[in-house]
Image (cartoon, rainbow, N blue to C red):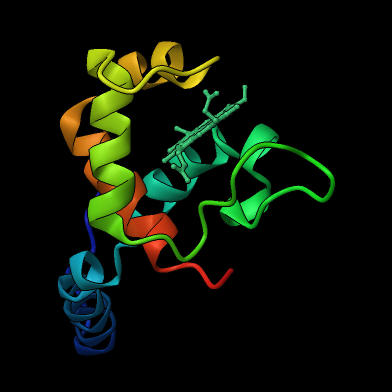
Length: 111
Ligand code: HEC
């Protein structure tokens, strides 16, 4: 097989594409918000979508609560300091970092 040398036009086209790809990492999507939303979705069954609460349910609304408050409650559930019907079991499944992300997420939602 005989290789043909790059013509100036082909060379220019290849250079152009390579230049575009240099910007590719900057176009990558930040996965953090999606991760946080997925974590928060595990609370939606009981606390409503985005923690906005469920009508006629006795489960408290989380949207708009202060982040420090949510974080403190989750830690209190986890340690058993705050008695609960279900939250003391659920809270044990979340790391300190995940609890911090959840607390910030619900604090930033409008009730
Ligand atoms: C199975 C239903 C259920 C799920 C799922 C659930 N919760 Fe709860 N949550 C409750 C109930 C019920 C209470 C009231 C305390 C209790 O009895 O456990 C509560 C209370 C709370 C409170 C205290 C609110 C206050 O006003 O003091 C916080 C904070 C909380 N939940 C956070 C979360 C977070 C964060 C998640 C997701 C990781 C979550 N909950 C998932 C049922 C649930």
